[in-house]
Image (cartoon, rainbow, N blue to C red):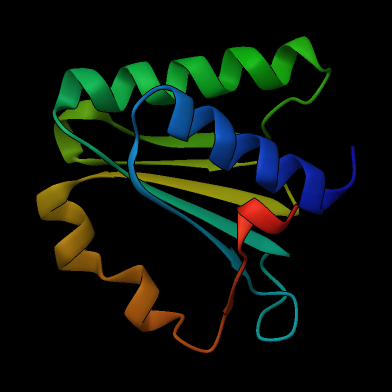
Length: 115
């Protein structure tokens, strides 16, 4: 899968598992960290773990392994590094605190309905 396909798949998977306010940001032109960020909110620490577990499972089924997964449900933020795609899943409080969309406001918001 190409980076954009992985990012769209990740966002769709989080959406299907009831992730809240799932956003797909194209950051190719503004950072060397990745090509895409996927950002989602979980309703609780249990939901946070369920979202990230499901995404990791679904991507592994397609042969896509994470380079690293950091954070834990108690911290309110789990980061999943897939190289060209980085997935951030937050609790509501953590998402408001870190405000990634504001920090990366120059990113292009991808409209997944057009994919």
